Amino acid sequence: MPLQSRSVSLLGSSGAIGSLLQLSLKPSPLPLLRQPWRRLRISQEGGPAAEFEGVEPSLAPSSSLIVLICKSYDVMSAVSTLPTSAPILVLSNGLVPLIRPLQECRREGELFMGSTTVGAGKLSDVGGDDGLRAIEVKENGRGQTILGSVSGGKDGKVDSVELLELFQSQMNAASFPTSVVERSALLRALWMKMFLNCLINPGCTINGTMNEELLNECLSVQRVVSPQLTIDQDEVKFLFDEVVEKTGKNRNSMLQDLEAGRKTEIDFLTGYIRRVGEEHGVDVRRSRELEVRVKDLERVKNTVGT
Image (cartoon, rainbow, N blue to C red; front, side):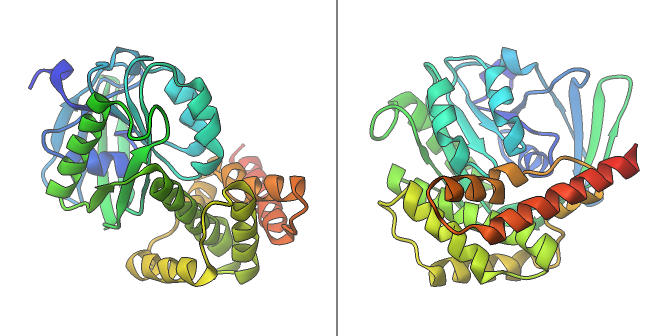
């Protein structure tokens, strides 16, 4: 299939989840690769490798849905490199703080967001001088993926929604359970993912278990920011237990980032809860404590790395 005729382009194919989707979806997405990379060779846990030719993000076809999978702190800069008329689907952690900035920066193209509990990790990632990047990925779990529009009219532009639904069908065909929902249900899903990210990433990384004080702080901030949503503690606990049961043997992404000396997404998780909570007089002492401790660990790792 010609590169420019793909219905889905994927920016983030070199990340763990992106690599898994690049390898699994049929037809394969068009990888959007930054220099010096031009090609990907991806395999899954010792299985046969598949090779994919990519293009620069700025050359992504505006007629395709661009699926963006990256760290939350890279989302805004990544979006700025893409064609302004192309519809974009953002699948990242910590999306609640990014809803308004993304709505304000997107111009012509439809903006979609999604929440996913698909889990993956990279076993190896080797780059060569010939522009080829070889990645071996491990699948850690197939949770639910929920997609929807946060821009445009009530249901989004017809052509763009059709592309989103096509991506949905590709995900389901590859056995990644995926649904497209209305905006209120999407906002609810984004908050539920926010709760999970806060509880599992900084929460379990520092404390080793779920902390109810942290959950109550997150819920209090959600009620300030999105008072139209009703989410109770038991609902979040049920989802937390469900996700932990499926992925409990895996090391969460924040722990992996800290161990590798990489920047974490703490500013978009408990850092966001702390900032909004302080602004509105909510007691966020647990969120503040976790933010400080994670940033201290970041500094220690960076100091050791240098």
